[in-house]
Structure formats: structure tokens, C-alpha cells
Image 1 (spheres, rainbow over the protein chains, first blue to last red):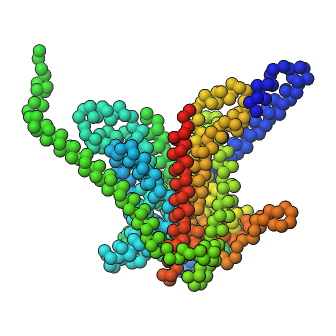
Image 2: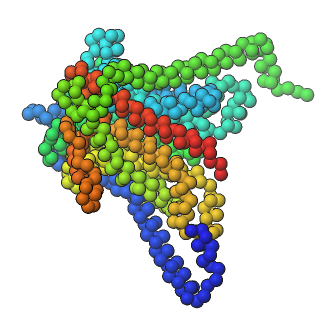
Image 3: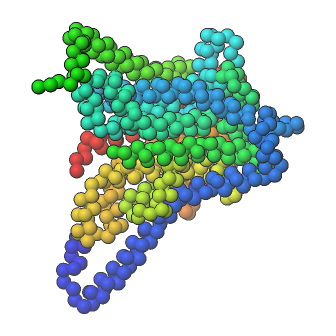
Length: 316
Length: 316
């Protein structure tokens, strides 16, 4: 190809010039066509988002024709498949909130400590080994974590606390917390490493120790990146499905106690889709209403995280 | 020479006192480094514990028959043949759809996209798509592929759903791989008269291929482990036969019938076995978990290896 390009302009008789003119016009059209195809590929991501919104809103719209929005937001029972049907999202929200809180109470402190350690204390080799190993934690399929929470962690917890039911939010949250550690640690560490070296050197020159520098110089400087990592973790925890579906049970339960079984929004969607619901029934539409709620909650967190990440990139 | 009064003050500390203060602060360095290692160990121990428990529980069931048997009411004669073949077929569809779309989008955003509002929207979009919970993609697949496009609960609907799910991963990996190619490669190609597409096809894509491949492998590993979206799309409860062969003896030798058949995949098989109350099936779940975890960790290991080789070999 390169050879052809080199040869082309060498000797041009008039006919050859014409030929090369048409050839360049054809190649110009080809170039524009390729650019258009690639643009369409890039636009497909926008199309996917639009499709998600359209489908969720379309089915939820039908759902909200039958269920007033006020009941949806205030009723404390969620029993769409019973004869005495109630459509209150609160029990699913409380389940989601409790399991996410337990998970975040594990993931955020551990993830932050690991990030600070790897970025400020660990040797180069330690970091090179620890980072990929930690990322494997996020690579294990979630259904395996679900199995682990349900059949290993719950029996262990039952030994410590005999009254614990077989399904509970606590073990689901704990396992989910370990699972999302890498989301916190990886992104926070990237933010900490983006802090310029001269800030640290300035701090050491003033006589600060490593720990003081890590806590009072690096952490504030990387704050928005760390916050973005936390928000990503929140959005992961809220959207996590298989761990809670297996370990926390699928019975909606309006509770704030992690020691009880409860369904999350995601677990409800899984439970309903497992059965064979007829297309167009209220049960079918209810999963889209729950899905829309879930999508809106995570969308808020995602946008906040995106904004924060963009800010920390611009600082240096 | 006159000293300001405040200048003389620190001298009230004796050298011994100052050393004591320094020692006290340095102790915190040690404490925190210990804490960091502890947090790392918690993550690693969980990963190891999970794997060891799965192997210890499921080892006895990992016989050749386990890989060649279909669903069964008796746990000891049930196997993962249908799930393995299903995973293979679904992932085939996923890769065929996600790779051209994702690489095309990545190339467009890095090499073609002008800096305007449209590009900005596409970028926010991709970052947001990466944070949408996977079960929401399942709802998209259910509403769009299964019902709007009438693909039914089939292999192709499942594969396309997973393709949308891993699209952001492929796009981001492509962009990062392209971004490492220095500008003088582009200038050199243009100086020799290459068109934009010639530059992309002859230089950008070959040089970034290893990085893109890493992204595709990570995406496939993620897709293999996804459970929730496929339950939502509607996986079959039990499958007793192999799907129709993709090859035929008569012209045109390739058959696409398998695309329309019902599907099940490895993680769904594991989920179904885990949620059965019968303990014999939970042993099957552990065995399936071992296979699943080995598959995803092997793929991730491969990706890490390629990335490591890449960083070692390429010096621009």
C-alpha cells in the first residue's frame, strides 16, 4: 500500500491524471462512508441509552395507569402477584438500602485503606502483585459470591448468632462488600497517584511523616477522585443482583434490620422473571416500574461520579 | 541582628523531646502499613476461601460425566453439557455483535470525532452505560429483543443483551489502546500520503490490537459470569438436548437454526442448583462454580499476561 502511494505522483500523463482524479474521488467517497459507519457505531451507545429509557418508561407508563404514583411511593407493602395486590416500592427500597449500607460499610473503609497503602506505603513490587489480585475479586462471577454468601457465610454467622434466619441481608451485604472493594481501591488509588510528587515532597520537607502526608496532603488533593470511587461503589451495591437474590431471599419485607430476610429491587426483578409471566400482565409491567426506579437511582449516582471524576482530572 | 520573638520559641523543646515526638509520629506509619496489609489480606483470604470451599465441596462431582450430562431430576446424574454449549453459543453471538460495534465506536471517538457537543454526549453516555446495573440490561433485552423484535427467549436475544452489556468495556479498552500510540506515527503516515482510513487500517488498528484484545477478553469474562440479565431475558428452566448443529451437509453448509433455540448458561445453571433446597444439588452448584471460576479467572489471567507482555515489549 505504501509503495503504491509513493509511486502514484511520479509520472503523470494526462490520461493517468484523469484516472488518478477519479480514483481520488472514489477514495474520498469511501473515506466519508467509513467515517459515517464509524460514527453510527459510536452513536449506538446513545441509541442503547435511549432504548433503555423508552422501554422502561413505556411499560411503566401502562403500570402507572393502574397504580397511582402516590401508592407506589407510600404504600408499605409490595405484593403485586397476590390477589390482594399492593404496589408500594418502600419495602424493596428498604431492602436495597440496608444491603447496600452493609456492603459499603465493608467496601469503603477497606478499599480506602488499601488504596492509601498501595499508593503511599507499598513497594513497587507489592503494588504490581496486589493490584491484579484484587481485581480478580471483581472478576469472580456474582452468582459464585451468591453461593458463598448463602451456603458458607450465613452458616458461619449462624454459629455466632444462632437466631439468624437462613436468608438475611447481613451476609449478602458482607459478601457484596468484599466484592466491591476493588471498585473503591482501584479508582481511589488512581486518583491518589495522580497527585503530583512535589506536593508530597513539600510535605516531607516540612518534616511530615508518610502517614501525615497520606492523610493530610494526598487524601484532600485526591478528594474528588476518591469521592467518585465511593459513588461508583454505591451504584454497584444498589444494582447488585445475584448475591442478594440468593442470600437475602426474595420476600419483600419492610425492615431496617440487616438480620432479617428481605427482597431488594433487583431480587424482585429476578424473582418475577424466573416465573413465566404473560407479556402485558401487571406483574410483567411491575418489573419495568421497579427497573425504572433502579435506573433513575443509579443514573443520579453515575452522573455525580462522572462530574466528580472530570473535575479531578482538570485540577493538575 | 534582631530575632523576632516567635523565632526563639521552639527552642523550649529539648532534642530528646523532639526525637520522642518524631518517634511517636513514625509509629503511626507502621500502624497504618499494618492496617493496609490486613485489609489486603481480608480480600485475598476471601478469594482463597471461596475457591477452596468450592473445590472441596464440588470436587467429587467433577467427573467426565458431569460435563456430558444434561439436566436431571437426580442430582448425581445431572450435568452441565447444555449450560456449557449454551454459554459458548451465547458468547459467540455476543462477540460477533460487540466487537465490531465497540471497536468502531472506539476508533471513531479517538481518531475521527471532532470536539463538539455530540462527542461530549457520546462520552457521557458511555460512562453512564458502564454504570447501569446489569439487570436493567436484562429488562432492555426482554422489552426490545424478546418482544419488540420477536426474537423470543432465544440464544440470539441473550447474546445481543450481553453484547450491549460489554459494549462500554470494549469501547473504553479500544480508546485506551489507541491513545498510547504516539502522534508521530500518524504524522509519518500522513506525510507518505495515507488517507485517514489507511492510517487506521494499516497502523492504528494493528498497533492497538493487543490492547483491544485484552479489552475483549475482559468483556467476555464478564459476559460469561453474568446471570441476572439472562434470567430476565428468559433462560430455559431445563434443557435436555444439544442445540441443532451450526453445520449442515447440504448447501450452504451453515445453519442458523441454533440462534432461535432456547438457552441456558453456566451461571444460570449454578443459580438454579444453589437455590434448590436439596443439598445434593448444592454440591452440583459448587462443581459448576469451580468450572465457572476457572473459566473467568483463566480469561482474566490471560488478559493480565497480554497487558504485561505489551508493556514490556513496546517502546515507541
